[in-house]
Image 1 (cartoon, rainbow, N blue to C red):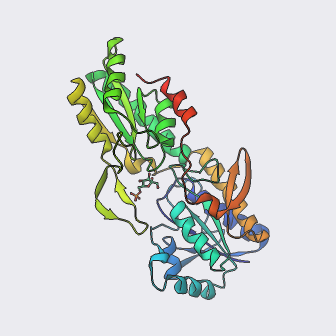
Image 2: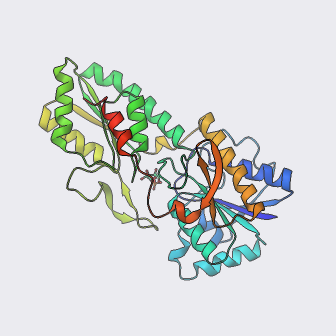
Image 3: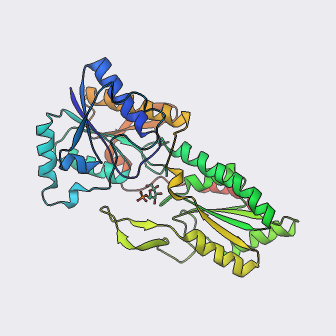
Length: 343
Ligand code: F6P
């Protein structure tokens, strides 16, 4: 078969493991010829490619980023987007396209499938909030990095009698905040799913300090919002091609409010893209590899319009539509469990 592959949206540790697995099983097992589209959907509309063979995937499993690079290009927004994609399919003689991405990239994949093109999806987001699958590769790495940062911030917070507010990624869901917060022993964790009350946050910190503690760690997901506020804190009005604002800044806002209300000296740290960069964990390399093998097998079984998915310990597939529409949120029970450790 002639197979195309692309990586779209924000990068994610483990992308190279997926690419490697697709190419390895495709070329060695099925005798496929694989072409990589560069920079997400931009590479498809511009037919900008690189050949992918055993040579090009050598030594990439431990590398972060993606050898295909990525972008947030949206062909649906282009008047001739569909035509250009069809031209690339014809020019490359594609029999299947494997699109690795989050809800934006997979939304385009579904649109193309509905237009009759043979597309397979692979779920990707460090936020771990894609529906239809239990776990995305990259999440484990991001949680590990955020947890290490929280560990490090403990000692400086303690040395200075400070509250440290750590802002982590998580636009719609607080998976990274919750996992890293609990694993790192944070004293308060704020997530997009649960609107917070600043007075309650301050009460929790005061309760802790009244037990003789003189420092605290607050972990906040970038998408968290106080009660009665609808929009997350963002950096400017500019939206990307999928209509998303660039989030960030809730940590600083929260730090100011905590300091004002409690009198405790408070600092904010925004972890940002450090959570996405660098070496994937062994777990994410393995998960990415499993997703890659599943995706190429799906292409050969003709399972188009579907996304590779992890259910429990098993790789399976779901219709792309199942991954789209709504994000997979942290449930009440898990947040309640985490709150045992607050304050
Ligand atoms: O989609 C995952 C994510 O990590 C979000 O949590 C975050 O808002 C976004 O990517 C930021 O990505 P970028 O700065 O690359 O647009």
